[in-house]
Image 1: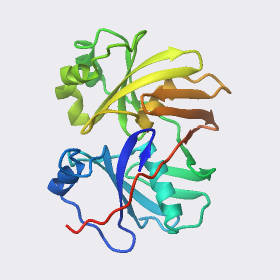
Image 2 (image 1 turned 120 degrees about the vertical axis):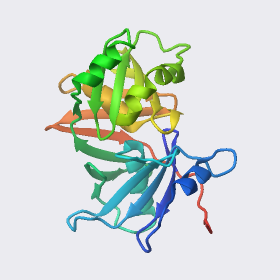
Image 3 (image 1 turned 30 degrees about the vertical axis):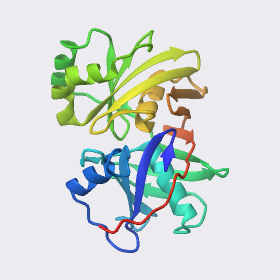
Image 4 (image 1 turned 180 degrees about the horizontal axis):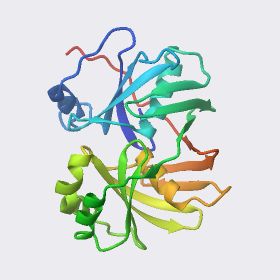
Length: 253
């Protein structure tokens, strides 16, 4: 599946437990020799009986991510499509967030989370200021994001920006996004820790939306993969975005 081009292999760990190894994840993550994906998603029974499912995310390098908002939408659609739950609102657990999801039409999903917040780490900020010449913000939207505003996204060398600061931010599992304002639309490009440059990143889009909200106004965050819509209400962040199935398969490993 993919959401805005952010692509996932989704595995069913509801009926029987799926045990993953780092090598297995890396092998099927390969776009040359495996299936290829940005993240692998496991759908599991919930830890809390008041919730519907537990959703876990694994990056292409084998490491586990805290959250993936494009992925949570796709996991929701996977659950409804497979009749693992009625097509209605659900409460989904991740490692560090609770997300309310509900279907919107045949393909879109609405996901509601707690409003992101600023990530405070003075030592980290001082280290980054030595390497980044433009203003930046550190945001926690389930995943940590370094958000850098620019007036020009053309010819952006995002991988070079990430590699310049990788030794500082990778221990914190921080992703890097560069964005440009355009009225109520914002264009964004993201390098995800453990993945690389992606066509879209939901938590990155949520982080940039949080930084640029004006009361009562919705924002469209546009990446190479497409557009996500955000609205803030009652201390919640509400995202609308697409989901799309690519293919189904069976793994024998």
